[in-house]
Length: 216
Image (cartoon, rainbow, N blue to C red; front, side):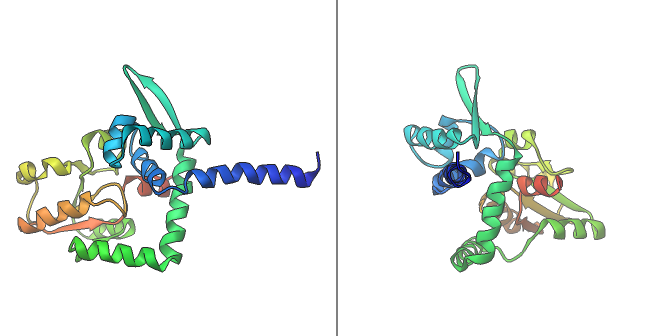
C-alpha cells in the first residue's frame, strides 16, 4: 500500500475523532463525564436533552473510544476512557479561550450576569493559601467529589449550601470551585455566600484542571 494512501486513511480516522467532539452537546457530555461516570438518564438531565438523543451522542463518542460503557446493576454507566480525552478537550478549550474573541466576550458576559466581581486561578489559590488560611469548598454533587477532588477541599454541594452555612467561618476567605470555567455552580455558591456576609471567591478552574496539571 502506498504511503500516501496510508496517510490519507490515518487522517480519515483522525477526522472521526474531531467530528465526534464537533457537537456542542457532545463536548458538554465529555465535560460532565470528566467528573464521574453517569447513566444515560442522568446525563440527559444534565444536558437537558431527551434520553434517545443523549444516547445517540454517546454512541458517537463511544465509536471513537472517547467514552466507554459498563453495566452496573440495571444501569449502563458511561465514563471517559482515559485522561487523554481530558487533555484533548482541555487543549481545545485553551485554544478557543486564547484565540476566539467571541468566547472571551461570552465568558465576560457570563461573569457580568453572575455578578462575579472577583475570581482566582489555581495558581492564585496556591499563592493565597501560603499567605492566609483559606477554606476551599467543592460545590459539585457529592458523588463527583467522592470520585475525585482537590486535596483539602470540603464537600458542600450547592443544593446543601444554605443549610450548611453554620459550618463555614466568616473570618476566613472561602473559595468555591465546581466543574471548571463554564460551570455555574461555583458562581451561584459565591452569590449565596456573599449575600450572607461571607467573604467568598469563585475559582476559575475545577478538579479536572487541577488533575491535569498535577499529572505533568
